[in-house]
Length: 152
Length: 82
Image 1: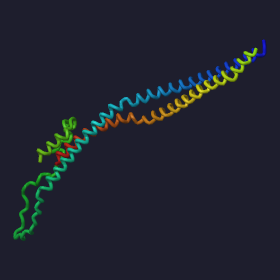
Image 2 (image 1 turned 135 degrees about the vertical axis):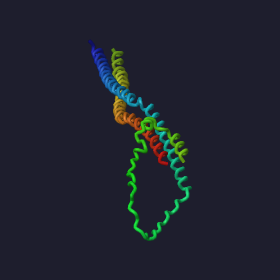
Image 3 (image 1 turned 180 degrees about the vertical axis):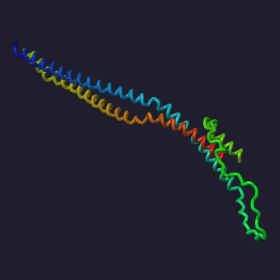
Image 4 (image 1 turned 90 degrees about the vertical axis):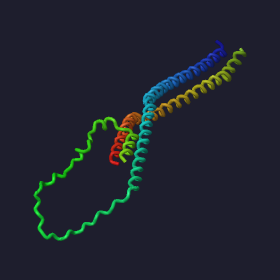
């Protein structure tokens, strides 16, 4: 085997070795990238699972907040009308001055009638706070405002 | 004989540097992609951590629904007072 052939074989061997080393590095890097992208895919799926209900929940919350806003505006109007009505009423007359009665010439007779009934009044006897119908279906603000206007 | 030496010289001075150059470019690009994938993984983990409060939205939805009903009852009570 001549020297030229040996040199040629050596050079070809070096080139093949370099290519093989680079291919090994490329394969290792690709394997690492595959593992990382697999993790990224799992994370993206988890994020999708976490954010799936956001749309419907946010829509419902926005609807509820809109309704609360409307109701509170109705309340504000109702309270404002009550304030205007209270301001339009004439001021209450001053309480009459109590004049001292003239001195009795005779002693008052002792009371012979029955005593007055007990003045203790239980508010719960008048107002039914446990109204099931009221608790189960709260009226809307329009109904409440209409009731207030009819009461005024 | 002389042709073999010329071929050797071409292989050594022409082909081998080109092979090394192109292979190095490929490896460099792949390492950049790997680095980007690692950063993407880190940021996706951070994003997932930011979304831990999302289930609380369901509780917020329940509370706003209850507040809506309670405002109605409050209005009814206020109308009765006025």
